Length: 51
Image (cartoon, rainbow, N blue to C red; front, side, top):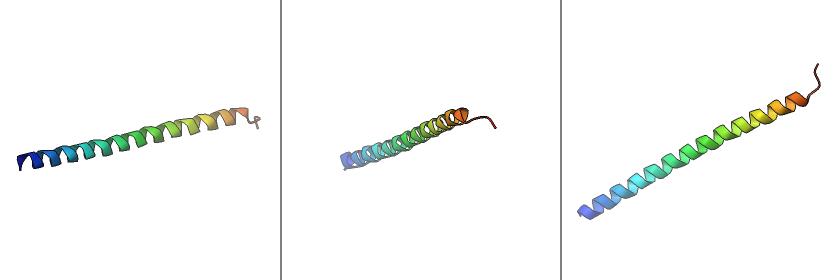
């Protein structure tokens, strides 16, 4: 019985860590994507003729 409890506990901790890790990766990707888009827009606007 004790080993079942501890296995479930480990499994649920791993799941929580995995989910946290996914969220974290998504957040980093989202931020990187925003930075890239901003940089691309900035470069594109520098190439526009001045009005």
